[in-house]
Length: 100
Image (cartoon, rainbow, N blue to C red; front, top):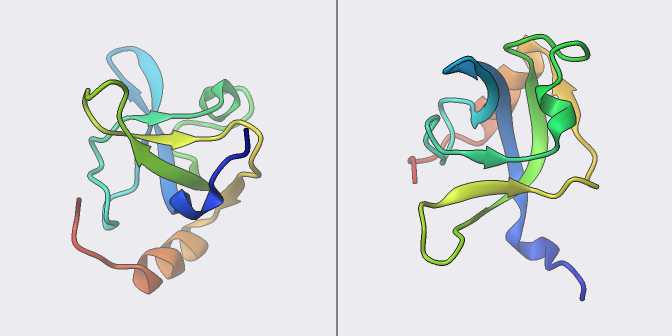
């Protein structure tokens, strides 16, 4: 079964500490709420490789499992780009939208 890449879009996400765990959430200023869950590779949450607050550019799609709460899904095999502060600002300025 092939993956429908049409459903995926560029999303800037960042690693944060929440309740004693490292989580990944969308960066504020995009179409997605910064409180939305992101399911992604464990490697993005590895603080030995990426310190807390690291921003990434990923391909993600919004989904829900069996009618549950919507979340962003990042396919584990897709490339991930670490964003500098300037790159993040440029990305957000190019893609400002209303929040979903």
